[in-house]
Image (cartoon, rainbow, N blue to C red; front, side, top):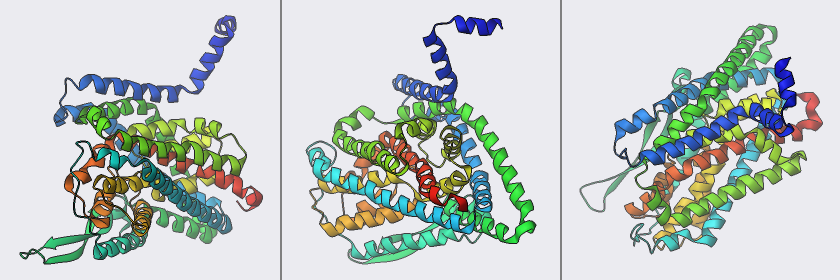
Length: 467
């Protein structure tokens, strides 16, 4: 009673402020962690050298623990969520949701790449940077048709290969892809081209998604005989969500550590901003247009709801994606934001989010479409319409195959070496800006993944009886 009386005696603005802090305590802690990480990282730059790997490793240790926690929960979360969702949806509803989601992801990926290409074409950041000390222009600009053909076909085959892993246990910790190796012989003009397998040390999420969907469908077909496994998956899902809650409350400390470590290990962020300012501005402008204009308008027209309120509900996932630079690691938090803050149907989120984490990388698509054209401008290379279409086609395919890969190595393997021959210094130019763009790009990709659920839920309202 005394505490209630004291609360009533407080001014109205204090009571409102207290209510806001209690409701959004986690978000405030996340923003505080990012801010403190930035201050700590900038303060330590004069003390810790970017080449001091041991000191940076110790600084990033709390963040490493956070990443390990989140990645630990991805596997049980994806499998249990998809199996549970499949058991709670009928076949017709599942087909509609999955088909609409894939079409939506494909269209918005192409829109993101189109925005990036238009901006880099009109702003011409490479032409402005060519006069600076970024890198010397290259005189070689011959496209490689043979290598291009292989690099277009193999990613499509990789996509199908990873959908059907030959070992389910192996799919939990690695995936396989094919890459083109070009070896020069003793003769200057003789080369040998071979396609070799490359083992990636990341989880084959696509294979696990396909397996979980098929397993859930078969459990439904089994009827009562499949109920024990379905109940087990439901319990596993609930237990995993409780574990996610524990990890979420630790995330402000881990994010502070990751942000500080990233700032310390940057060789010279101020110089990178000076040399690549227009390039960075082009990418950030494209991300802002796509994430703050295009997607909210799509959401508004499809649902007739306030997109700002929805964005506020997903702000915790955005802040976590910014700090961890990984949209897959943010998947557990995205579930909490959609289901608890935005009140999206669990059956929709549990089915769509794992698919989005696999095939949806709009932020990366926009960035990767800008980078090769920037390099071409930097080297004075004029790309024709066919080469621009090749860039769009390859990136759409490869982004869907690779998904959440830190560092965006696709640019080096496809755009810089296959679409045209460029100098080594030119290839390294956008890479120096990668740490400055990674967090913003992953935040945009995560926004795109979480805004799919309310759209599909709204579109499916007319047929909600099937769900």
